[in-house]
Length: 95
Length: 142
Image 1 (cartoon, helix red, strand yellow):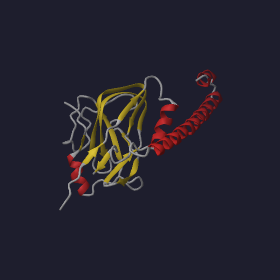
Image 2 (cartoon, rainbow over the protein chains, first blue to last red):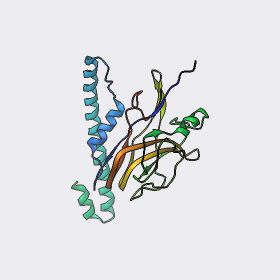
Image 3 (cartoon, rainbow over the protein chains, first blue to last red):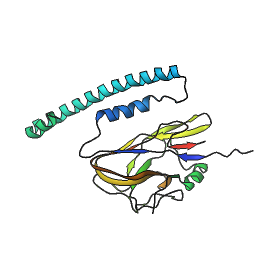
Image 4 (spheres, helix red, strand yellow):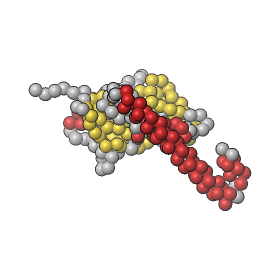
């Protein structure tokens, strides 16, 4: 007997922004969701532990994303100042 | 005219013919193209077309390449995934999208409906893929 299966497409979500990019917390949440997935049917004690771990991962990812953004801005500011664009560099510094 | 969420019928046949390879390394290149609400897409879509494709700042016809994630299984379900895709600093309005195989003649994989128009204005337009598990993953064979 041949068992008949089913091929299905999942549901995507779309996130957009206006006149700015998505912030670091958005990306930290996405990264965390990709790293840690907590099953809905697992034992409550295990679920609590997994959720606590997920929160910790989110904080760590968030911290290093913010550091990466700061480092990138430092590079941009240095590049702009080296090319005599101190006014633009100042705008980025104030972000 | 409408965009109906579906796994393309031609894709199901092509799976049996070995047309599509979703491996992260050595697999085919898949792309995601955005469409306006004027597009007519669904299970009968067989390949990418630029008709009623979205347009705007920092969006080029054909869309953008996806990053494959190795297919895996959970229980009796096989599934695969892609990394989220972002069109940065973009001004776009789209109602849905098509994932297609850029390596193999732009053959259609699936049509994804956004449930309405989504717009970014000089910002990020991000498509977030669902949790990669047997119940939610973007492409599943149960």
